[in-house]
Image 1 (cartoon, rainbow, N blue to C red):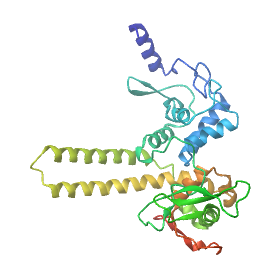
Image 2 (image 1 turned 120 degrees about the vertical axis):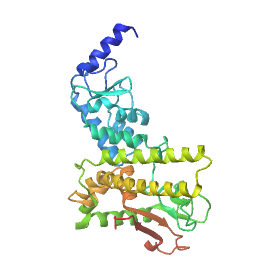
Image 3 (image 1 turned 45 degrees about the vertical axis):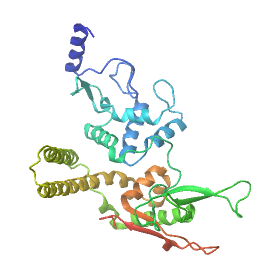
Image 4 (image 1 turned 135 degrees about the horizontal axis):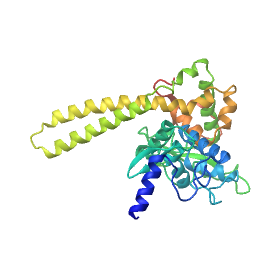
Length: 331
């Protein structure tokens, strides 16, 4: 880029003008005005992400409704991720590694964009780029035989009740064949628990005040504590005279503080996941209206599920074989 072009770009940044180049979905070609229908879809994607939706599910939903990207092509998981990471929707633009405010209309506020960015860049919650889950408890429910945290996966089987090539969907232990349970009665049991819990008068207590300016403060604290842990580890590795017991004690103290901060951050996030269903007039209908990935996010916020072996033969389903334990503060 020539010196003149660099100067012109810097001037555009200083004046708060939108970037040049290909049209950004949600904005007109010059980037100065909103395309209202597209902007609404972008805003909905941010809301869906923070409410627990999966990127692949968002892409599929847009494509099914005939809403495609600026080039008229179907959305992909990575394309949705790119939208949600784009600072332009929060009225910002990047120049030489720094963010500068713009003067074009925003689609989401900066706090929402930063929260979305944090979620997408959090490696601890990275998910497979493959197709979305098909069953409520796949990869979530634990095997009650292993009792070591092993989760179940979904599969299927044939049998005397299966005709015309139909199969029965199952939850199976990932390790061995000692657990295989039909999905339908288990899912119904879990769904009844969720609806019953979120229909209680005290369900609103599960929500917190999202207007409180805590998210950024907590995120900064967490980053500082992680940095201290890294520095402490580096110092221990580089200094042969450092006492191992002192190092471990110091690391434990910092990690305990980090756990407290992360727990408070999780509390702030959970309200976004639960708010639509907790505040609905009909909790059961609100649950039914959620996409599967959002239902899974709600369940993951409320409780853990452990599957125990069922009765043999044609014995009726026993709900006690599905152990549902509320997470701390969610009972």
